[in-house]
Length: 484
Image 1 (tube, helix red, strand yellow):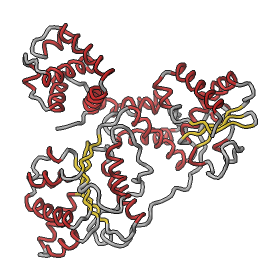
Image 2 (image 1 turned 120 degrees about the horizontal axis):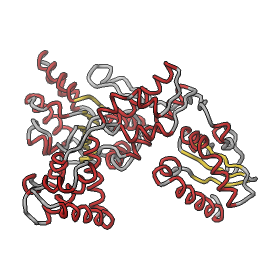
Image 3 (image 1 turned 180 degrees about the vertical axis):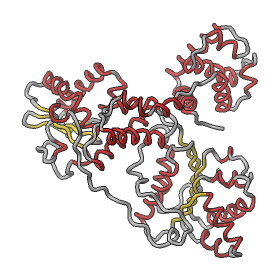
């Protein structure tokens, strides 16, 4: 462990960096930097990924050295290593042995990163069984817990998935994961399956989409083989069905799903379901099924925030460097993408791949200007304009009040607070003037809007619940996802 004196020096260096760079930039690049120790005139730091190491080396190496020298003139270099690649048996203050723990010198780090592809641990091979028989769907080896980036918007779903995957008995039954397209539901389901198979290869895990479940059932009906169908699905230890909303309106499939679900629950077998909305909001699904889907734990995945999007991009960029060799992705490009591509994770990763592929094919360096040019169509579709009407509808749904009440003269707190939140968001997310906003809320005066904005600002400082509500609604509106 670093000495108390050294830890105090590091706190002062971090504080000065944060003051110089601003909170957003500091959090993006230095929040995860950790002090390991100091020895023989050098300070040792670690970061979680190679990409972050190279970015800091390219842009802040000189300044880091200056700040440490201000604290103690005896420190002549700063070394930085990727934490996962530091041998655990080595002492924190031992000399670096690998390239990633080399002195943090700007002249060496600037330019292209030259990371070699690293040997990645692969999930265990899938045993003979359902996939080979054409019943289940294959699992993607990329979708593991280690590859899942956790943030505020998905931490509950991730924690619940981990608990179910690691438990020796059935905990939440069913586990119901829900959220918009491309936010990580399928990734978590695959990760659960891989983890269960790694821990207990004897457990029978069956993963498939709701569409495939329906196809298998219809096929069994056609060939008059429903008993074999029932036996296949009711003999498993873990049943995972993705995108259950696709059986909406399919009465016979819902009937069989209902009986399969009940049979597995009654025998204490784990059931894991995903959908694009909560159980109670599934339209075209029988009430008795919606009720049973809500028996266990329903964990939602919200639209991503800026910090999570940047973290995902940093991880993806690091993975690209390991797989593809020399590639330079300026941090400013990642920050630009994290700000502009807000729809979903799938589109975010696709945008980065597209930029890297273009740069490789035409031989151009990756810059923010080039990125904007290559992604012109995608950026245009993400520049969605939020309207006051949409804000009113989303806020009314979120607080479970009638839209008409928000526009009325009612002053009951259950209506007045959502109305103030909607006014606040209208001021933050639209270019409408205060009088225009007031007119949209039942012909109110602009002073009412000013009061609402100030009130919500005050509440956000004092009430973490209001702070979370406003942040979540803002992400829903900016990302175009949320309750339907």
